[in-house]
Length: 301
Image (cartoon, rainbow, N blue to C red; front, side, top):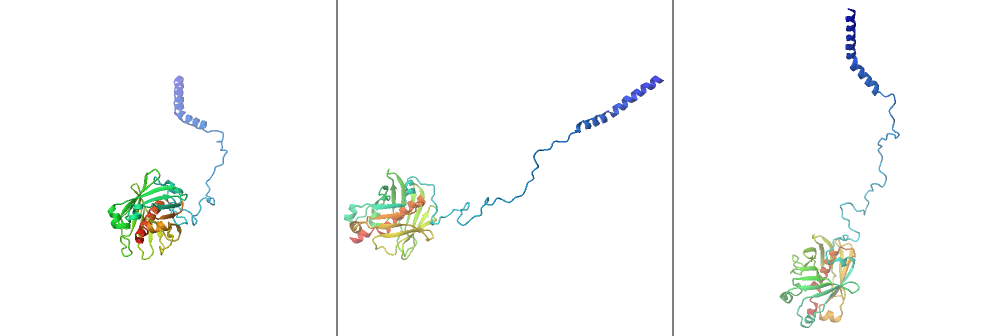
């Protein structure tokens, strides 16, 4: 019986030890996971975000005269800044502020009075030839309609390459008919650069210089009287507040003035003016010649 009791005690011991095993192992794990040393501290202090005002001058307030994003700025001179897109053949105009237009004398026209095709030479202020201008029109239009004829002007450079084409439709010229006034369109190839449009006026001649979109960028005001030696047409800003240049018909000498209609013109404009508008002003000079000075030789004969 004693041996049996001993075996029973041994079995009870192992059963009790088995039941307490998982609890002891969990306690042992907790004792091992708990470190006796404190966690290391970071050597850098913890930074907290601080709300501060912007540095003075970081966001400047718009001032008068300062260009705003997305809003084109018009200089004090009254014209738009130069466009960086230059049509082929007009690069030389970007550095010019003067042009001289000289009409060639046609001997047949001078002796017979028959209207011939006009030809012009465009020069810089040093007298160097820049462009050649040749009129294209029909003989019937020249003989029957005179200076009111419809025609085209072809502008060539020194390499005989066409760089501009100017189209003048058949229009009237009378203060009593304001619906069909004079007009001239300037093209580079098939691209419209601008238009010269006559404005209706009872006394003083006036023209609008329009860009390709039809917006008036400059105006030209003629003189009150055209009986002077030099006749000046003033080039002004679109609002008329600034005078930017002029187109002047210069005295060509007694012989040329009396017996021919070959005239000399000078064109003055800002150097930083858009090169396309400079080309339109050249067309305005030719239109002015046709409208006011083309028939004077015939009236003197």
